[in-house]
Length: 344
Image 1 (tube, one colour):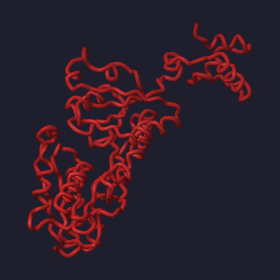
Image 2: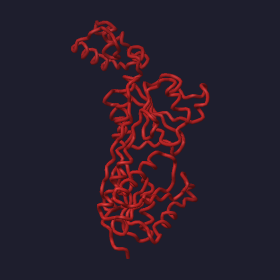
Image 3: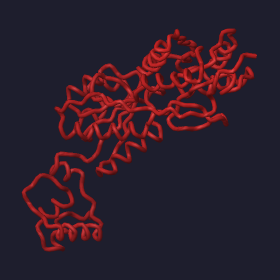
Image 4: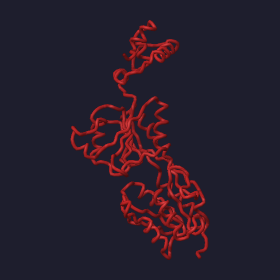
């Protein structure tokens, strides 16, 4: 039989309410001294007591958990190790657990198929990790049921935490300008409608205009999710770099584009940091090609922590104003960028 608060109370000769106050919490006028609280916790450990979530909910009105809501569709949610680490680290400091739910779009159609996390109060709030193709009904359902929710890596008008993509790519462009580059392009293989596509291009464009230069945004036009057996992104990148007026400096939209462009450059015999300066994107400094890429590094761990902090404030005060929180990105300079070299 599970150990109960009454069992601990009988062993210590104290009231069950005192034990519940220490082990479960909640709003009550009962006062427990520090010495008694220590005795209660020691006895609970010795007896193998585990508090009941139901008891906690009755006492505090809280489940002590949040839910990380994700899409079941490939490409619509991304959960990097750094993002998960940030969420876990921040929650651990508040003794709160996280559950993960994947949401099929069609489940929002009727109350009968709606996921439990939206039908019942099984968590105190939601961290929503939909980056692409957000179900049209989801924001309205969250508002209707008054569920505290914070959106990660997307813009939904309120309660959002995401990277400052505009500033990051403006600074990246400035880095190339300071190296003497004037022929700089922004390269994106395919478009999926995420706000970062426009923001990164706009940051680059603003920096170019401030330098009195024209922008060159190249959209390669590849499929959003190419067939692995019919993937032509490398061919498109090679064709771009073979053009007689190829840029001397390049900003890649994504980490994948970074790899594709670096591979295309190697195929054509172009040396990164000499014949071509390339700035990529990453979640942490890394050198996947054996060359230290200059990268815009999005601080995913801090994004996760900031999302949790924002959600906990929203759970505590649901009516509080919650403007979007922008997370700064870092420019990590590697060997893939360098001064303009004469063309051979």
